Length: 487
Image (tube, rainbow, N blue to C red; front, side, top):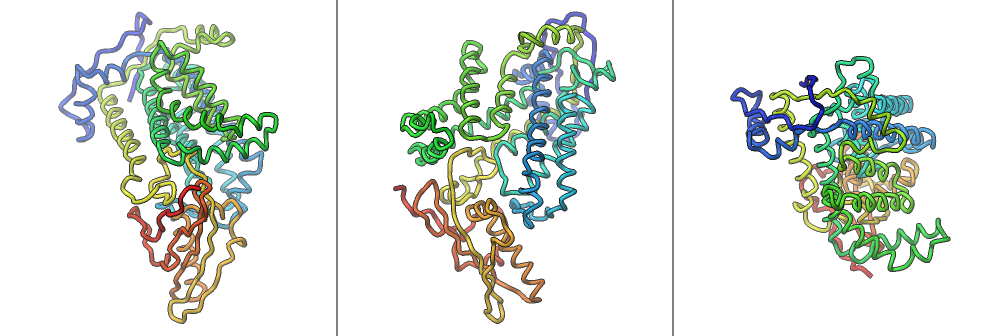
């Protein structure tokens, strides 16, 4: 796919853009080649210009170390046990009901392999294999327990997918040390553009989603700051003030929509970096959201000059000496067309998936239809309660299900607020009672929920037999509309 070639002069000069060939492997490659590979294409010139590899190398190392830390944290704090092995049932996303809950040794093996893979990424050891292994294990753990959904967990899998194709192991790596022919001082810019392009979409969609009445009214931030004040009594008066609420509400909205241009434009880059550090460190201190703030700071470095690591006071000079040999990695014509085709498909999906909630009626924060994988971050606090009744279709005999005997407290909270999970569990009950009774049954849910501290209201139509509902992406008429006003 790519080859390393020596160059006589190390200065950054964009390689010539290769014109489209008539023979290509597929129609998508033809389209991509014509759009991205034309001689006059500014996008092609941007994507395949030469940049220093140092910035991507540092990101690879930090990404690997952060992922290793996160997996080790899950193991050390007992979260693997509590979240994956203690529950007898793990809730599943729509489309992934077929994933079976594995035994405890399998789950621990998955997290052990994930840790080894993350360290392999950081070291640049068997890089492609390490990234592929991390991508598979991390995505598997993510899909295995839908109740643990986090936007940044989904984002990490997407970034791992992009790193699978990036030549981030071509310097300061075990692979380059083992095989010097892999070494490259400079690469083409497309790997960096893929990652920063994805994160830019996350910022934009996150900012646009904040244009809703609840967020602009200060909810759920106001209540979350009150909770945080109990943990930090020394600054409780500040956290509980309306000034703090408005600062986060409107400051967060402005940050999401402006941070990318601030960092990209050289004249405002320093301001953008300072704001990014302040924003993500504040999030880490107040909301305790794991590695996400530190990961976003690592991505922030990719928006800066690729040569920024040379200015580090401790490791900069050593890194500059280590990457002294001027060797450039250049992508072949066919590989460039394949990269363009992948980018076109990838970003089309990333643009359309967050917009799909407009195809459904009602408030997405209430119905949850189109919420997952859409970068709707920190926009709602949803709490509820649910119970199930199983009824024999032929005799009318019914049974109330004891959920506490099977689900943990955290699972009950997620189940009560997510219609997809309610339907999944209803079908699980249907299949279980069918096997034990040897006859058809109906399943009804009695569910109530509260969105952003509104008064509680009924959530699921109690007259609908959920056992007969076919899971699909179509609108769900059994989800009752939000009618309770904000107090």
